[in-house]
Image (cartoon, rainbow, N blue to C red):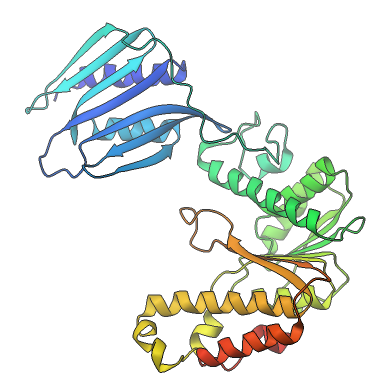
Length: 387
């Protein structure tokens, strides 16, 4: 294989991207007739994290689009060019470049006058509000989300986007709640603290509120790490404590958060929020073992539930449906929705609850729970035993 031509082509492609003169790149001419797709198109777009690539893979009956970081896009071009696809055409401001491989994988490159005069100005979707600013942010840097210069790292952009989506969700909940002055918040299962820090940051620096937030986490090394970051950031009202969710004492709190607490730990957290009279409860459940083990179901459901994966999914739906109903029975208005795309995690359901005088009748909700349990042969839901 002639490597010099390919190396030159990849070099001018990288330069065009770095100089933001890149307009489009097309890879075509499959090396194998059995290759399912026929070509790939690359275009630039400006995201909050910086310049990125949109990759469109063309199949005979459909297109598949992915958004890649610069490094991911360039690596994919290098991998495919001369292996799966034999032609490369780069359109940039100033010049066009063409690379061709023959069947012996010998390459030739041509440079021509630019056929397109204006660089693409593709903005990725609609510019969304930046709830958490990356610049000068001590905890984002300490948690490995941003560089020393305050730029979101490519490999952490999905996490940064999740943080912003989370704060957007919390902001809407606070608007609907009766909270005005009291912001005593307990985050059970706070983990590495990404979302805990972001919430404190938002309340303190955007809402001009001085919250009291406690992160509860079983792993002592994470607690120590988060307390060190909190001290470095000067967050006096944010502390982390070592402990198990089920053993955490019920104290007065305004908001209870439990994200990805495993199995019945989510139920323990919800129960403590209810018992403490929290105005807002937010949870993103993890695994659902308790109901799955107990769920037998009526004969009508057996053809479906005999398949393990369908049983698991039905158990998840049933578990979270009853959790939402039990919250309603205790005076909350609830919502169950997809928090982030399932591309990032399969555990992407969030349950939010806001205490409301307009909550549904307790008797009506308990009747609906009883009907669900009867249909699926469920003896009890663990959250029932706690409240």
